[in-house]
Length: 322
Image (cartoon, rainbow, N blue to C red; front, top):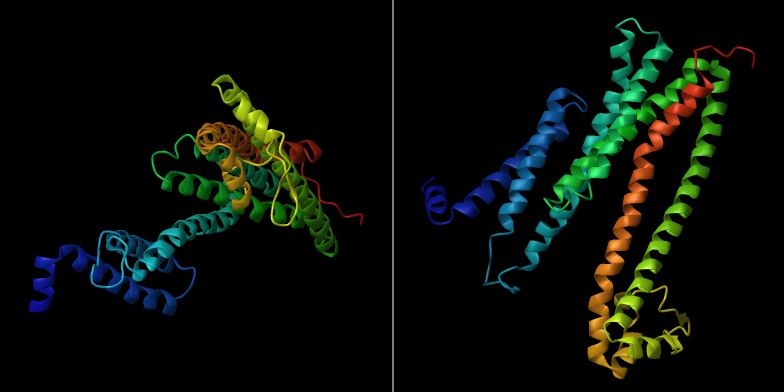
């Protein structure tokens, strides 16, 4: 006991780190042993996440200059970095899990108030469809803390899980048992095609705005006296190690292969550095715009889907003639 008291007095940060780590270790055993899905299990899970966050945060301020280190950070601090990366993902997926469970319960709230099954489910899905709109705040509020986008995207993911829990149930509400699997399969295929289309749309959108940022950097460079250098490097036939042609209108300077960067720097290293620093913020600004557009599409997709469903099935009617 005296050793712990001495440690607490001499190194309170190490003592705090030790206590939270041991508590997380013991609590982790209780979580694994306990019944999954219960309220106590979820509460203990959040307590474990909090303890791990405290353990990770405190370890970032503990230095050790005796072991091989870089400014006091030893290879052991790699675990700190690992947990710092995985913890936001754990929080995000936990929030999504809450949405998945809550999405199944939510329609019952309206059904118990006297709504018919279809009407109660559609009303619940309409409310759920508004929640993804919060992800539009992820970019403008991201400067406060990276936890803001994590939590907001987590809410969006939670709404997606809640929506999914209901969209599949609408099939069993309307179709006979023998047709449920077929209808869900057709819907899954349509969802897969939609996913391919959205992936292609996102790729085209991001590429277009990146190219626009690069083009803008050329114009800005020429306006500040770098025209000769820009015209010179654009006229070169640049190849990577594989012999593939490099198009400077489609690739950022910071993403160029090392051998191509060295070739451009050999012409005028100072001019290259100026152009590189000029291009970075211009491309970043254009990319932020493209991400905002993509986030907006994803955010309103659920409201559009709800409107389509409601227009196609304005009133509930069980389909029997299959």
